[in-house]
Length: 239
Image 1: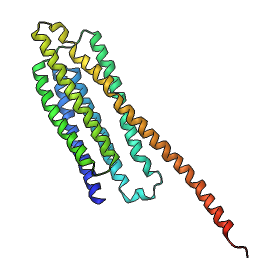
Image 2: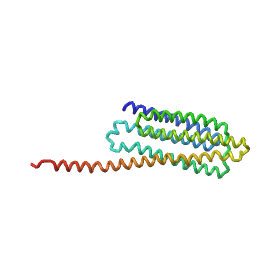
Image 3: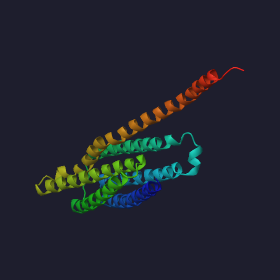
Image 4: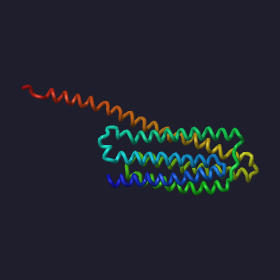
């Protein structure tokens, strides 16, 4: 068990460092290039970073001696997962609104060559992190690590969608349809937001179900204890 706890901590730390690197790279490059979808990708990494730190704190507390006396310690994991899902859902909603606004304003012109290079680096990095979190995380039995791997899977597919979008935009320019290429950037954000909002919503629903079950179990335990006590009293011989 100690080995699993140590591995869990190392994986969450790896996720933290990776998220920080991708967040800085994505937001910085996205703002410099004026690309909404790259900023979206970087913002997702930044949100992932914040949530990973939350997971680290939660995991540290759950494994600490203090948690042994806390009756609600089992609720921490699903609560953290629910918070993650809610934050990611909110981010998808904000990104969707921003992208629709950009489309209404006439789209965004982006340096597709540089964006493609960013996409390749991003996909490789995200895929590598996801693979490590997925394969190594299975041995920990940690719900927090499992949630982290889902985040990285989302980030990997988002990065792939970003790159494919820029491939399409580049093709449109070469085909003499550059006036449509400016819509590729915000359109990718719209598609990504609508598609990926499903995963965090499922995370929230699953976590809430777990929390409700834990609450029911807590309410049932006192009643069972009373019933057990009554039976024991009834079985006691009279003097």
